[in-house]
Image (cartoon, rainbow, N blue to C red; front, side, top):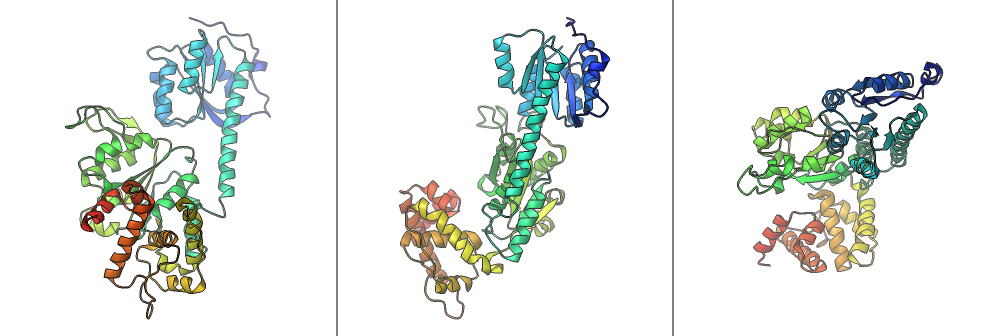
Length: 458
């Protein structure tokens, strides 16, 4: 059906030479009516940096893969596939731009369905040029506000990164590096000893990125069995393996438009490494047991406490994946290299943990801080947090016997194990025996806690 067009003179269609309101924005127009396409190209081409057209979803999809459009103007009634159906897929695939839907036939149900599908605006044909321009103006104004909010969030976080505590020169350098990396789409590899705060750094990268409104999805690669890790990451279809009674989306799906944090990446089995490399290079994945490829829009941040170069040399980690992950590397320093940050970290953990535990805050004296500074903290910030939590529960700073000649807090291995056991018992008691919650507070996996409790016949 040919929809009657409003009569607009070329003078009306063309924007004044000095007025190009959306010169940096691009639009994709999808409509099967040549008259409508011609009209919108003439009207919008004078006002936008780029206007492309397609007569169907099949023609539009390749254009969208090659170019990131700021806005899509989409007819509902298209040959082969409706605009609303395609809009559902666009949102599922992570397209975040606004979409304006057009139709010559509309009722309340259609309008509601369009809005539920994620349409930013809805125009009934025939419409005037002013109506179209007003709809586009609203969309571009929303996009401008989003960009301004993002810039404002970055400015507010310019002097501090939440969770990254420390005034030492080495930590200032780490924070500056994170701030510089965050707004880019680059894959990031976080390295450093266990307990140095790699997940905190990953969350900071996410919060400071333009994906901050999307999900942050963490996965400990060592906590999932080799048989299930591919399904966990990439999803599977019904019948893909024994026990797969229904299809399931993987973590890449749940992290779309956000950040996927892969902790302990060195533990990833070789077959999963190969599949991850392909996803990172092609931005598409194939669920286990499926022939269908799905586009992915996810930023990957990986972390490890191992030397990946040594793992590559030992043929336990793919060299090509290592180089693909190491687009940007950030080394988190051990606590022993920044003792001047200890007072700030202790104060931070006391303020954070005391209300959670429902206990009074403690104030460390100079002698306590000096003893902390003399210790080398093999467990890094995580160990310090546990010491502070244990001390709050007990009501005093429990640092073990007075060190002699700089001896570590806690003394010998036997005393360390006794302190660890007492601490775990205290945390379990504070959690009412809930091992999952206790493991979370202790910063260990539930499997590790179960193993220790079994060894102590608890």
